[in-house]
Length: 75
Image 1 (cartoon, helix red, strand yellow):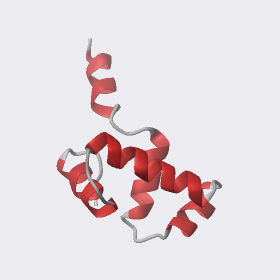
Image 2 (cartoon, rainbow, N blue to C red; image 1 turned 60 degrees about the vertical axis):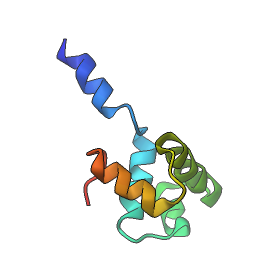
Image 3 (tube, one colour; image 1 turned 180 degrees about the vertical axis):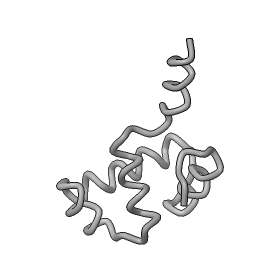
């Protein structure tokens, strides 16, 4: 079943985490991302932190590099 493969390929990031990182690579600030997604800055920081934990990296820029390497994010 190819649907299973599609799910596995997309399972690293949630839709919201992907939205946050797509805005992050557009050089948006935490405040701008929060406003655009109608969430608090704390929520944005939580999404970023969760992704960094998933990837086992220490910073936003490292997370972006790893997401691009894994094909999860296009810049």
